[in-house]
Length: 249
Image (tube, rainbow, N blue to C red; front, side, top):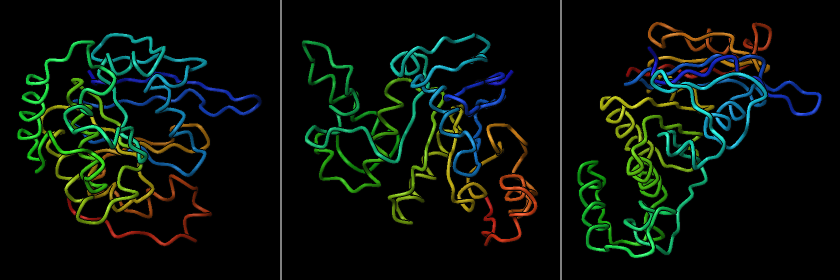
């Protein structure tokens, strides 16, 4: 049984059918890439998963239990968390405060808050202290804080949406290392990126969306970049594109 299953997801915006009965599944301990051209339906599918958008049809299941995700808060309570390119962090607050952002009680046990934050940061080997203000960290470090924030909420499914867009090569590589560590811990990871070299470097499987439909779900092992591009854009357009060289896992 897959950790996450989205079954027959449909969504219409006016006269446009954005998702046409899409199935999508993620295993525990898997990095699953979700790719497609702009407008293919990736963002809409993930907004539904994150509780930000209601589907017109279909079901979402987690660990064999059907979910009804009426809000982002409900999705987070179920362990489904998005990490966006534009981070939802408070730069003037400390790392520890950001880890509990939106979940702080009226009366805070600050010693306990910072102790728990320190344990998590050391466990993830992030290289900074819980006392430091998030605003003084580099962008790559802030992304790591966002991941730690998700883990502090006991995330089971982590969705990364173009998470490396603003990162340097060094920062991106540190994020890749952390994502692989989380896979090894049994989390389900969804990786959305237009950079196919990242997909080949990181992912175990890939699902391709085109025109609101799932056209394929395949293991990355042995898949050639040109074959993936052909699935994304169609055979006629694929020959016009520059393709990346796949990297080993």
